[in-house]
Length: 349
Image (cartoon, rainbow, N blue to C red; front, side, top):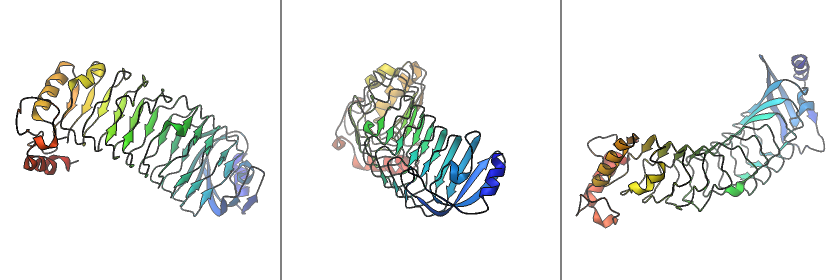
């Protein structure tokens, strides 16, 4: 039934508007997949059940790729009751307006990767009860509005990799009680503030790999009792004084490829019984600190990754008191030794 109706629809261009539709598409090719059938049609206006000719049952994959679509306006995709997965990638989209995704009770996955997104309005993603995952990787997003993600009761994962975000705030989110994975790799965030995740307590995995983090407030991760993975690798951290008092389930911690010269074992006291893997390679750690870490990791059966790709260079010696693992100034190290470490370790990812 659905396939036959789709076959009919593919024979001509569809132009339909409604009160929920501010036209976003202009003679763009839309592909709809149902079971083994793949149907293409040219569409102007908005993507909805009427323009696609589908009913309220079944599962459909909706895809728009390699088109020119400046913005997703109100109701760009709207009024579809069936279960759907939507992929709108490589379309040069710059803006997502409020209520762009409207009345979609069966929307499960949403891919918006490889566009030119810079602006996402408040309430762009709202009241999508079945939505589990949002992908907005490889765009040009510098900031997100307050309440961008609202009342997404089933949302599990958000991917914001490879954008230009300069700060993080939990005010992007409102009523996302099941969010488990937050991936914000390869952006430009420099600081994480006090209790930045306190309203996202269901999080199990957080990744800020490849940002420009220089400072993290000691109480940034307070209240994250379900967190098992935390990746802060490939940043610019010179010190690490984060409290893990809430992170009783933390199993994997990534701090490799930073600029840490000193790490206190006291920092890991709260997680030493749960932690399974600790990544510290490619940090210019004092050799005395490395010795302490290796002994501690063996005692608590933690896999410690501390060696550089060049195994002959894995730590640095201070100018004096080299057997003591203490906080030091950059002036306490031989500049040449630090340069050797950087060339032989930090650059070998």
